[in-house]
Image 1 (cartoon, rainbow, N blue to C red):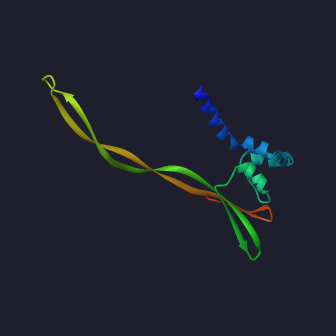
Image 2: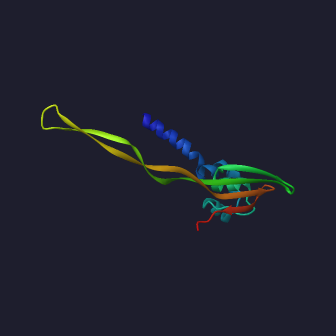
Image 3: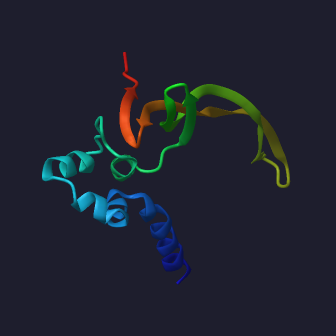
Length: 146
């Protein structure tokens, strides 16, 4: 019973940011679009002139939102990041002790050996920056692997 409840909770929490959930949430916006634009959004692609709702449906909630105030007006930027673990080597973690029975009853030989563990560090990398002007996508900056 507890595992069913845990699975339901996990599904409810993770299901809130799926493409289908976002389409259902913004159905009026999505179904008003032409078929080609709907297909692009389903593939997670955005283009110049898209509205914030269209970008949200395609990509989900941004990692960070930044507002800019400039002489030519205000701009909003949505920043998307990816998160991953990076291997950082091994480190000494302590000693492992174990006893081996000896030849005589009640006698043991105790051995110690060093224990090492792998280290990983949490990393994040910005991969997409979308700037809006007047409620439309004005520029898209995307990182490229070189």
